[in-house]
Image (cartoon, rainbow, N blue to C red; front, side):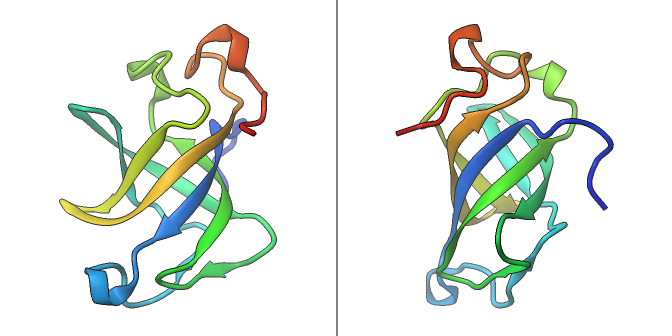
Length: 116
């Protein structure tokens, strides 16, 4: 179930192939990995994949992400930022920020703009 508020970002999420220690099963919409949003700050996030319900290991998908407590790391998102997607301490993929919707999360001049 989606969180009851506006999404924080839209990102292109790319999962590592299983052979590179990535997931061995598909990630489904509703997946809640952790994200390294600052060099010293991990937070959970809710993924909803646009135009597909699941993403296989080694694949990419445009993803809406809702972070847990984004007020704890204000102005930490920017267009083009690469965020680690993890399961515990294990890296399973990366997310490249394409759009930022949460006004707390990014510099004012980038809200809602698309990364080209």
